[in-house]
Every structure is written in structure tokens, then in C-alpha cells.
Amino acid sequence: MVVNDAEQLLLQAKQANRVALAKLLSIVERGGQPARELARLVWSLGGSTYVVGITGAPGAGKSSLTDRLISQVRNRLLEVAVVAIDPTSPFSGGAILGDRVRMQEHATDNGVFIRSMATRGHLGGLALAVPDAIRVLAAVQFPYVFIETVGVGQVEVEIVGAADTTAVVINPGWGDAIQANKAGLLEIADLFIINKADREGSRETRRDIELMLEMSSFKGWIPPIVETVATEGKGIDEVFQAIESHHEYLGRSGEGEKRRQARILEELNHVLQAEITRKVSDLISEPSFAERKAELIGGEIDPYSLALELLKFAVD
Amino acid sequence: MVVNDAEQLLLQAKQANRVALAKLLSIVERGGQPARELARLVWSLGGSTYVVGITGAPGAGKSSLTDRLISQVRNRLLEVAVVAIDPTSPFSGGAILGDRVRMQEHATDNGVFIRSMATRGHLGGLALAVPDAIRVLAAVQFPYVFIETVGVGQVEVEIVGAADTTAVVINPGWGDAIQANKAGLLEIADLFIINKADREGSRETRRDIELMLEMSSFKGWIPPIVETVATEGKGIDEVFQAIESHHEYLGRSGEGEKRRQARILEELNHVLQAEITRKVSDLISEPSFAERKAELIGGEIDPYSLALELLKFAVD
Image (cartoon, rainbow over the protein chains, first blue to last red):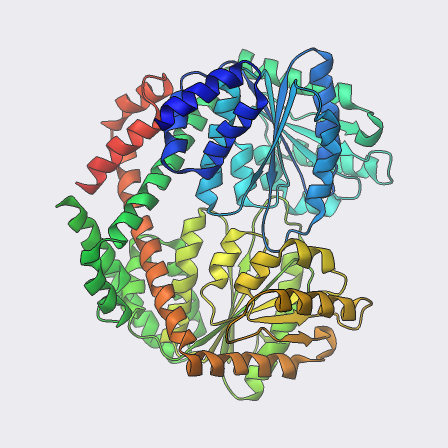
């Protein structure tokens, strides 16, 4: 029944029905059985969607960049979807929604689909939801999907792992931050963008990144550094060219296929975690568990022993 | 063998041997079988340790506050342990280590034990490690444990859940951030600290918090708001009094017992997750899994179906 609904929506979404597509992504976001059914449905439908991750600290100018990159794709008469990850931590500040508004100038363009997803709720939820959302967008045959994250935590790094090319956005004067986060940056960046490059310190920041790249032992692809002033549209052509170069490199070197395989295994991992969580909550909510729970709270049994017991019990 | 080692270390740690205590916490942090054995060992040993969570955005002044609160405890001739959670995101900036240094003025005081724990690695790991670390510190009979987190994500919120009293540190001028994160703040805060209260906007920030509290329907404890200038030691007495009032309230209202029980069930949940995850990862590394893996990568089976299949084997 649910699957039939999803199949119907998918059919409509493929005919550029954005309302149907939005409904599909809501199914993904809500999770649970319908999301699993949908994920199974789109699993094998994916086309040749290219996924670009755009990440960086708040205020780096990610949304302005994404906005300009959308135009690049549209100039090529291709369609593009943007998944913007909203952090909903109690302390993240309120600037993010304001950023989003900027992209809304594409809102009337049916060739652009923009969707926010919140990191609220359980982390594992989002780690699953983002790859599933990408698969839905791939099934609908978007040639490009952009994922924008504020990149302040492990979750965001995991999400970025779903991208083919990850651009890290940095601003002039961030030398110390680069120095402090070398390992993480080198792990995820396929491309560095120095945005607001008309500001003071741009040259030093480039040198900091270059130095970091020189000190590391890259094989194959060395992340290029592109300077942009996104608000004025400067350097955007170069960013898009760098993305296309990386795309070409991934195909030529076999690295793309390696990444694809790693991603699938990572997805299996996430699915397993989610299934395990479900299993555990089933176990705990069983009536026969009530007595043992009292003993646990009373200190008569420790959670380690009880966990083993519950797992054994699950067999019978 | 390992247990005997842990027992020995625990004995030494109880005799104020800080090196032994540090070793115990390393066992907790590394996880695996030794950590589980240790957790089982200390499970029932806990004394009447009171756990205070101190959380807030980077730069709010948490470490300065913690530093002053340590002195408050020491003035009462009591011992205190601090667990500082280090976020290891690629974008967190490098300020955190600098903050930690400030607390090191207590480093020569054997009545103060300071320990950093990193959020690197899997999130679930830390969710388990922090309560276990607290239990070790309780077994060693620290009357107070402070947990300091930068509070930028769901993980930190979960960690804060291990505290009896959670103080949220805010600075003047953060009205927008308060507004944007109302739900999260109301969920975790037992106490609001406006630090750097000598700065402009302090009164407005207080009003923002008061308004937020008025709009919500609190029963029982209404989080007090304390203004501090931690670097000058101003307002610290009031913070400590607020913590003690909340402590007293938890006891009187039965809320403390309710929280304790919820925490134990949460721990069981985490332990169960960890156990099942372990079994699944054993399964994945088995040679017999190689064939299924190839089918997954080849698109012949989706991760959802494979996950269910693996789980069936794991629980049997």
C-alpha cells in the first residue's frame, strides 16, 4: 500500500512534479517502515547523478556559492537538486535560515529543487536519510545534486562522505583553523575554495593550504585551490571546472568506483545500526522485561549482564 | 586477568593514586572487553557523586567557569573530577586546547582530577564511555564530577544527560541564538549562566531567557539565571548555590530518582546497541560474508534486505 503510494509519487516525480518529489523526500526524512520501503524501491534505479558536497564553517559563504553553482548548472540547461543540511543543535545560532533565503531566487525555476533536511533527532537517522534522499533524486534523474552542510561535526563529515566531490569553503584569515584541523580537512577535501578572496589575508590562507598539501603525501588527485567572491560571481567558472576535472579524474583513475563501493558498505553499516536500534527497542518494550528492569534499577543486575541475557532471550 | 588488573588499579585509585585513576579512564576510553569488565566491576560501587554538566558554545567561558567552580569545591575541602569532552570535528577551531590550559593551575592539586575525552571515533562509543567514566569516578568517591562539553551537537546533549544538574553558559548578545534554539535549551538547562555579564546586552539576554521560561510550562524547578564574570570570579558563589539548590530540589521532589532510573535504562540501551553492533561487525568480517558483499556492490541485493539477513544470523 505504502509502496504503491511511493511508486505513484516516483512516477509523478519523474515527470518533473516537484510536489511529488517533496513528498518522497518527506517519507525519507520521517524514516520508519515507509522510508525503508522507498529506499528499497529506488536502490537500483539510480542514474548517473553527480553529487557535490559543499561544506565549511558558518558564515563562510556556502549558500552564496551554491547559489552561483546552481546557475552554472542551469546555464548548461541541466537540472539540479540541493539538499541543505540544517543543524538543529541547541547552540548553532539562527543565521542559517537567513542564508537559505538567498537561494530562493531559484525557487520559481522548476529545473532547481531545493530541500532542507534537519539534523534533529537521532544522528543515525540523518546518516541514513541523506544517502536515501540522494538515491531518490538520482532515481528522478537529476544530473547534479549539491549537498550543503555547515560542517561543524562528525555527522556532517559522514554526510559529506556521500558526495563524489567535496568542496571545503574557507575564508581569508582562517590560517589557525586550517592548522588545527589539518587531518580532517585533508580527509574530506577534493577542492578548496577560498571565498571572500577580496578580503585581506587571502594570499596567506592560500599559502597555508598549499603548505598543508605539500606536507601530506597525496597520491593521484591533489585538491586544487580556487579563489572566489561568491557574492559577485567571481571565480565560479573555475570552481565548476575544478569539479568537472575531479569528476573526470574519478572516472579515469578508478577512484570513483572505489568510493562508490565504500559508500555502499557504509550504507549497509548505517542500515544495520538502524535495524539494531529497532531490535533493541523491541526487546526493551516487551512485557517480560518489566521485572528485570526493576532489578536493573534496584542495582541487583548490571546493564552488561542484562544486555547479554536479553540478546540470548531474543533467540527463543 | 584484565579484571584483576582493573581491581588492582581501582584499589590504588581509591587511595588517591591519580596515575592509577588515569589508567582506569584510559581503559574506559579504549572500549572493548576490558572496558566492559571494568564497567561491570564499578557498576555497584558508586557513591553519592554529584554530576554537574557545563555546556555552551565555544568561547562562552565554560573553562573559566569550571576553573572557578573547582575552587568552590576545594574551598569546601572536597575533591572534584573534571571530564572535558573535546570535539574533534575538522571545523571546530583550535581554541579548545588553549582553554584547557587555564584549568591546569589546579594540576598540582591532588584533590582535583582533570581528564579530557575525545569525541573522535564512533559516537556511540562516547555515549557509553562518559557514563562509565562517571561510574569509575564515583567508585573512587569523588563527591563532585564536572562534565564540560562545547555543546554543538546531539552527542553533547546526550552526554549532558548523564549530569544531575546541567548549566548552560550563554553570553550577552546571544538573543537570536536563544530564540532559535529554545526547544533544545529548555530540554537540557537546569540553570542558565550569563557569563561575561559585564558586557553590553547582558540585561537584554536575561530578559530573553526570562521570556523563554515564562512562555514554557515548567513544573517544579524553574531554571534560575545567574550572571557571572568568570575571569574575575564574579557570581561564582551564586552559581554554586544554584547548583546546590537544584541538588536539594532533585532529592526533595523525587525528580532525582526519576532521572537516575531514566539514565540506567539509557545505559542499558547503549550497552545493548554496542553488543549487537559487535556481533554484526564480527559477522561482516567473516569470510563467508565476502560473497554477499560482492552481491551488494553489484546491485543484486539492497542493504536493507542484507541487513535483515545479517541480523538474523547475529541474534541466533
